[in-house]
Amino acid sequence: MATERGTTSKELWSAIREQLEDCGVDLEALGCCGPNGSPGKVVCVSADLRSCLDELGQSARDQVLMVRVDKQTLREIDAWLETDVVKSRSEAAALFIREGLKVRSSELDELKEALDSVAKAKARLRDAARSVFGEPQSA
Image (cartoon, rainbow, N blue to C red; front, side, top):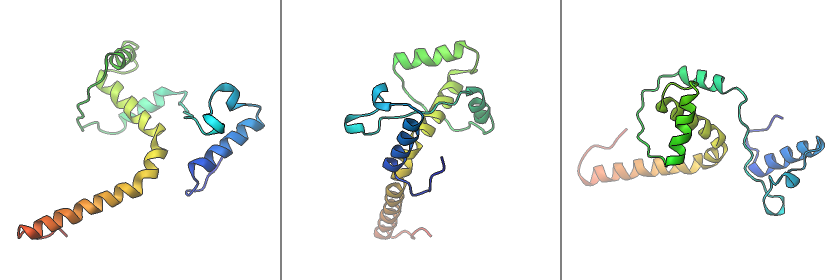
């Protein structure tokens, strides 16, 4: 299903629901809808985790991120490590962070304009502070 760039989440949800209903899939009966048929979180998972891992290997993982996780998350990461699919906790964490961000990319896209506004406001604030302290403004 092709969608235009400006399609809202609600419109996309309606189109997905309609197509699934045409195929005989009742999302409400499956418990995938919220109250009044509102969209639940629908997650599409790649059947081929290997291709996701290969994609991860295409780019340098040279940025360090310290993260604390709960015991259950660590057990699950270690379980993936035991499968020998990933070589380290770091690789497993990087893979699942990347995949999780893909799943949530539509929400982040909805926030991009606000994030851009915040970045511009911070730049204006830094410039104003520099002028108060007599330092040259940024270009």
